[in-house]
Every structure is written in structure tokens, then in C-alpha cells.
Image (tube, rainbow, N blue to C red; front, top):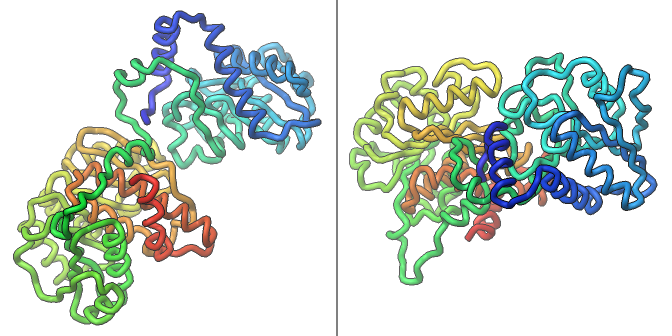
Length: 471
């Protein structure tokens, strides 16, 4: 799914009016009807007071039309046009049991709300009533961060965003305003959506399902690649084991773990399906792909070994955790990373690798610049994991849950991506699909064990459920 800027959305609106031979008022009525159907079908409204706040722009017109539809269904609906309120005394009393429909500002907002608009927004936030925002919470800038911490921005419980998610929804600083969000189809022109270019995308089931192929009945393990996982050190056997289990559950034909000798026995017992070697390797090219980093430490011997690997292996690889930490300290190794490799840092690892950054907007810019400069994929892990590509695209993840913020989760992800690359999927396909499969598995795990109790092992054990929905 594409993510468009506010300017592009306005362009698609105009194209839609022309291509479908409809007026702006007809499109507004269509939007209002879609909103009304979702609200009446999902929100308890019986004997409830509904307050609709409309602004002066198109978003406000959507809100006015919505209020008319709701009132016509005998819902207790009150409309307040904010530009007609003159003072604080004109703002209605809002009790906690009300439902607020926020249609004050939409995606065209370019500066922070002031005057009566700011007062209305703050009154809504102070009421503790349930709030549904149309398209985007009023006061939030569509394409970037909110201006400053003192800006008046609606704190929505639910955002019903029209046709496309907005870029601002993927910045962690804005999560307090967005709440849960749903994308509602309002029937905008399909050709315009397909042909207008954007660097921003949402990772979704549709894309991953188009990537993951069914297996040929006559195939054998050699057809699905051989992944080498360089992982683990004394006290960090779990990282190697979780990475290997993630790779095996994700379809790699063969998996070999390269671990220190002291981990040999525990790894062989814990992951009998994987081969295990402790000797120094020189024939790296016999592996379809290599993943390096989970739990390897940063000792001088490990640094030297990793450097030799980078000099010897020319295919794209997956680099995680201590692999990234080693490169951060030994920066000459940046130039040795094979092009189109997948790097999987969390924010701290990325800042050590690429430099300090402030808010999510700066992180996104730095992430894209790094991918362009070194021709690699950067998978920046977090609540809204993002993937930057060597072509300048940014892909955002919307699956997953806070329960995945647990030790070993990233090791599983590394194994999943390595397995997909071993099977012949491109690094881009592997990274995007790996993110979706891993986070969807985490959602299955959370349903079974809860976000507090789930572990990285639970993510591994639910990979099969995630693959079933795309295969």
C-alpha cells in the first residue's frame, strides 16, 4: 500500500472528480456515508450524545455531512462549526460519556492551530471523552512531525484515515495522538493511485502473499538454499539457537551454525535440524547466504574473523547486533559490506553506525541517506519498524505488538530473513516479507500468551501460523 503526501492526496482527489464526473459535494457525501457506516457498525451509540466539531476546510465539510447522516438515523448528534465560535464560553460542555467526532483540520494543515481552534482542541482533550478523528487528528501535520510540544493536537482514540495512511502516523512521537487507526476506502481513482510515484509504502499481506511461492512437489532440500549463521559466544548460546530456529521455521533447505567450540554441544542438542561447525571457515562461497552478528561479541578475534568474512563473501548477507557494533567501531569495514545486504539495527545500534539523530523525521532521513550511500537495506527496528532501500524507498510495518520487545526477538528476525534469502528471494523481498512474517507471528504469540508473558521462543513457535496466512 502506498503512502502519499498531502499534496499528492489533493491531486488524486482532483483526478477522481474528473475521471468519475462527480462534484466535490458528491465526493464529500460519499466520504460521510463511509464514515457513518463504520461508526454505526463499530461504536456503541444508543442513548449516547455525539458531538461533531467541524472546521472551515474540506475535513470540516466531511464532518458536517457526517452529522447530517447520523442525525437522520435518530442518533443524538450535535454539530459545532468551530469558526463560528467566538469565545471559550461558546465551547459546549463535554462529559466523559460523549463521543467526539473530530473534523476540525485535515491533511492540508501547515501550521499549528491558534485562537478558538486551539481552545476547542484542548477542551476536547481535557474532557476524557472518546474521540474519533476524521482522516488525521486535528493539529497534526500530515507529512512531518507536529511543530512543537506546546502545539494543540487532538488526542484521538481512533483515527479513520481516508484511502491511505498518512506519513505522520508512522512517527513514534505521534502515537499519543493517533490512537488506533483504520483505513477506509472512499473509492478514489485507481489509475491515479497506481501511477503517482511515492517513496513511501506500508508492508501488507497482499505484497507478501505475492512474494511467497508454493513449493514444487518434486523439490528437495538443495532447492531451498544453504544458510550459514555466524552467531553466539560464551553466555550467548541462546542468540545462536533462536536465530537457527527462526531460519529453520522459515524454510531454509539447510542451516549451518558457526559457533565457538564451547557452544557446540548445547547447540547440537537444542537445534538438531541444523549442522554445526566450530572450525575456521575459508570456503564461504558455498553458502547461499550468510547471517552474522547475533550474540557473537566484539573480541579482537571475532573482529578479525568478521573482517575476513567480509573480504571473502561477495553476495548479500544479513548483518545484525554485534556485527553492526563491530562495524561501528571499525568504520573501514563499512566499505566491505556487500551491496544489497540487509542490516537490522535497533535505534541505538543505528546511531552508532550512522550518527546521532533527534526525532523520527531525522532518523528517517538518516536511514534513507545511509541506504543510498552504501547500497544496503536498513531495517530499523522499533514500534513502527521501517525498511530503507538502496533506491530510496521507505517501507513501514504496521503489524506486531509491545510484547515483541523482549530479548531474542531480533535474533529470530535475522534467522527468518536469512532463510528467505537462502531460498532465492531477493534481499528486498526477504526483508519486507521477513518483517511481516516475524511481526505477524508475534501477534499470534501475544494472543496465546499475552504481551507481558510472551518470549522470543513463542515468536519462533508461531512462525508457522504467520506463513499460513500468506502461503
